[in-house]
Image (cartoon, rainbow over all chains, first blue to last red; front, side, top):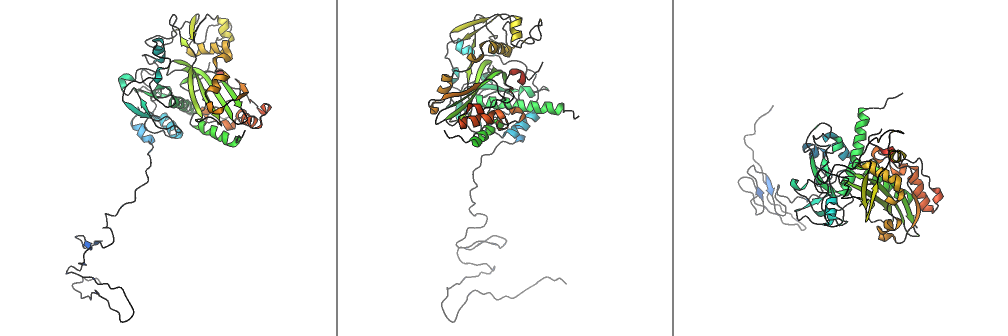
Length: 231
Length: 233
């Protein structure tokens, strides 16, 4: 049987006394709302005690700072933007992810078979502008480019803008003095169906690594397309 | 010289996983030839791989240098060196489109201060393995065929000299050539093979550690460009 409690009488224990020994005196004041009225005690409108002396209010407790972890781009990030540079997108991603992503996002661009026109390092050499123009500065806005898992982040001068991308080499101020090269994103060898490609500058190490990645992806694609016949 | 063979092989494997190890069928570098050089001293050891090829992205004939060793601050890919230039009198590339425009019957390159002209016959190309069959024409004529022809003519002179190699690694001090070869069994990195899986690499490390060049077994050499053609005949 269930019933509603209509009234009740309680005896509040607001003080204690002892008849012998020593004790820590403790006395609190209770108001008409059955709440502790002493300073430092705080209640929310529902009557919940949310703060008391010596304790932080609930909900405002100081949260432990989370350890800072650098977020690696996920495969999905690249799939959303097919033009994302797999190596220069902000952080290097593990090879297995790169490989899988490259396999999935790869589509063919209508001009993927064409060579990128424009001045090359050879042009600059011929013009007497230095044996290695990759050491020169473009004066463009610096960008950060990741040069591989074992390489530190470096501040580079970059083409930076699409208008400046139309050449197969780049400018950088890498501490180790390497040049930069342009690579199609998505990679041309995997581009078989005709979507646009973006040409982006990247450091030479990254370019070579991507070349290896593409070679592996092509192998895998070919192996899937023509599975070996079992005897 | 202290050389932990297991650790060194493990390091190479890690680089190979990241393609920071010579991938002879690299999609961005058409392959012509490669050379392995091992050097050692009482204190240090050094292994270098040079890969000659045509860099499609840069429109350049290059020599990519990879190095592993006890005195290499950053192992893996080290640098590329431009092998030779096009000559203004007879350019190899269209100055605007960068398309390959050299005539297979007569072409010129500039290597340093020297200007070298070539007029190979079909039999010359044949000897270089570039002609389809006796009496037949060139199978293809692209930049990489030009370089493959030069490799057949110049052989080792397209690679860095030992002095040039050593100068790249000042921390190594004076090293002596322990072994140098253009024929060894190279791991098929794009097919997930690892250096440590290859007899050639394993025995090379062992040979270096024991200072016994006879311990090196090249395995079944596969460093000729025919083994790494992306578009086989």
